[in-house]
Amino acid sequence: MPLPRFGTFSIVAADVATGEWGVAVQSRFISVGAVVPWAVSGVGAIATQALANVQYGPEGLKRLGRGESAETVVAKLTKADPKRDQRQLGVVDAKGGAAAYTGSACFDYAGHIVGDGFACQGNILFGPAVVHGMARAFESTPGDLPERLLAALSAAQREGGDRRGMQSAALLVVREKGGYDEGSDRWVDIRVDDHPTPIEELKRIFKLYDLTLLAREDPATLVPLTGDVARSVQQELEMLGFYSGRLTATWDAATAKAFEKFLGENNFENKARTDGMAWPSVLRYLDERTRVESARRTTTAPIVSNALDRGPGAAPKTPGASSPPNVEPTGGGRSSPTPASKEKARRSK
Image 1 (cartoon, rainbow, N blue to C red):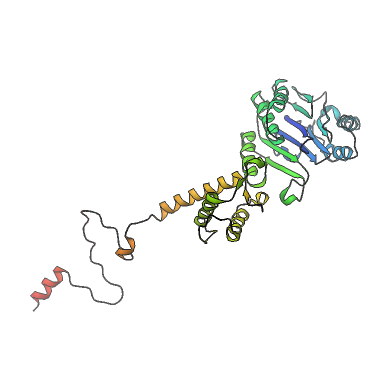
Image 2: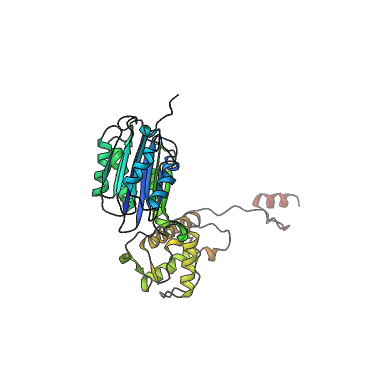
């Protein structure tokens, strides 16, 4: 029986000026991120799809690493593959050169577009407008590489995308020391393995990933932790239980330590700074957490006026409220007689 071929659209791209290479992909195929995208910082990026030959990934990157161009790598990989007619491939190299290949036996519509620093390819699509839409969106969208790659996916879907529907999506962007704690080049590595609207879900996950792990904000927007800002942060850290000192409006060692603990517990290690400045996104998150905590306290532990004056356990008095009923003591004491017991005691005399 012939092997199945899976409809997919993807884009490989490079931003050589910032040192970033990436792949974005969507497919009616489970966990497409485990098959299609491959990339290495300073080397290039590859998307292998249709009847995907996963060896195109490591073998192609090895060739790119030796300095071969994207066009040469595509030609050599496909020439050596007896099933090349069922393959689809997109490659971008270290210099931003791009190339693509669509086998003659890929299911319609199948095709690709190669542009300056990128290649868009897809199969089992609604038509050529899908890859054309990807290319236009990538070229015209402002922002950095992740934003442009996500825009390309959305544009492809607006043009119909995979004609069988949607299931999974992935975004992989590499840059030198871009990974967690600078331990790898995987700057952005997120996947949606199975979802009715995987591109929108991928964008939602990227926002969370960006908030905690990436420092993509303009350095010109960094906020000095001084004066009113320092006092506000102290108050919010106090509300959340990270700070117990005085509200001095001075960014001293105790405040910095409390802020560092807050960053660590909320997975902001990649956004920690030692220059007395903070990213606006971190301060917005701190403010949001504080407002949530304040609302929780107001709901679960409301402030009752004069509560201490009334003593423990006393219910607040309201105009017209009746006195609480007598309660039998639990400590072995004798209760005061009720009016009925007084009458019974009088008659027994």
